[in-house]
Amino acid sequence: MGDKHYNQFTYTENANISEYKLLQFLEAVSIGVFVIDAKTGYPYYANQKAQQLLGQGILPGAKTHELADVYKVYIENTDELYPPEKMPIVEALQGKTANVSNMEIQHEDKRIPIEVWGSPIFDQAGQVAYAVATFQDISERKQAEADRIELAQEKASKQLALRYGNEIKAKNIALTRLNQEKNEFLGIVAHDLKNPLSAIRGYAEEIQEYIDDMSKEEIVDFTQKICSISRQTTDLIVNLLDVNVIESGKINLSLANENVVNIAQNLVKNYIGHAKSKNISLNFHSAATEYHAFTDQHILRQVLDNLISNAVKYSPHGKNIYIQLSKNSDVIRCEIKDEGPGISQTEQQQLFGKFTRLTPKPTAGEHSTGLGLFIVKKLVEIIRGKVWCESELGKGTLFVVELPQ
Image (cartoon, rainbow, N blue to C red; front, side, top):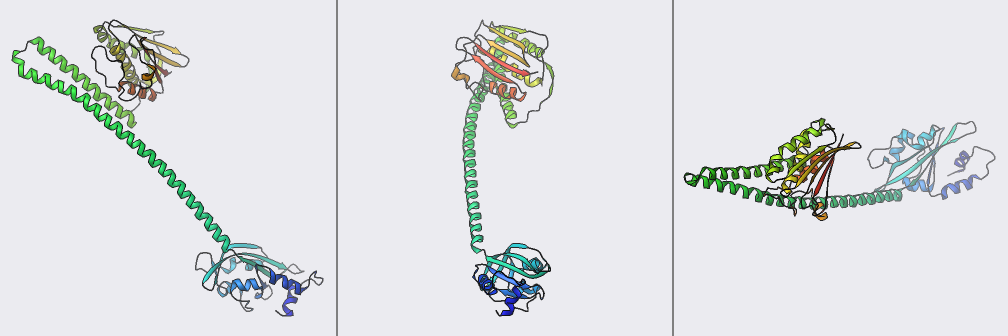
């Protein structure tokens, strides 16, 4: 460049550094420097680094709106020329400072990403004398950012794969467990239905074949057996349906302010006949004539019915059963205690499981599905209550149900 260009850089007469040294500094810096003369609007100066990045020197007659086309400047990752009005050097001509990092320069057969800063240079009158753009190749930074994003995505993908892998593993374990439960369920149901149905068929065929030779008493005995076995089968089917409804979450609650004393008393009356047949005494006691709970009457009746039925079923002949109601703090407490053989601590842990068959057996050949207490536990939880068992071997068993008032 000639002296004329140097002089245009100097707008203060008492410069602290010579124009020649200033030019040397500009040529030595590792970033591109590009200058536009604000008076003419044409390119004025480009240092060696700028010319290297741009692929050519300054074109003194190039207008500002032609810069993107002349120097092949594009919006990052597109084939669209960079809008002239958004170029930092053009904004600098308007007295503004600007910075962008979404530019690319076509350099031979490749695109170079650059970051650009635009700054105005003012004269003594405060007018823009020059617009300076400094820019640098940010290929390494872009590559580092891309590598970081790729690494983060790879890490996220691995974490996602690990999470999904763990989820799939957990689901496979759950499916295996459900399949085992299904097989166990089918085996128990097949056994518990096959035997009574075979017995019913056998009794019916015997009556059909020998009815002419049978006395009335024999026919009545056979029909009573058929009725008894039919009830057992019906109980099993009802329990299975109850389990299905509970586990599918399709129970419809009908909550109301119910008198628990009336419900319990009526259930005790229903079991007096069965208890007498085993010489068992049912003892009911309530500290008050009314204890009200906001609950579902049908569900509560099913819970207490099951517990009283079990007490009668598993109690030895000639024993007592105590059903007691009381109020404790903010709960109504229902206790059903028998004088049976009791339940070991180990078996108490399994007590409310599905298809649980424990050591104690019904004392008069009654049938047990192994589902009753499982249903009790689920139903009590549905009405926001609690149920548990207290027992020692040889000292009977106490079942406690607590209901919120």
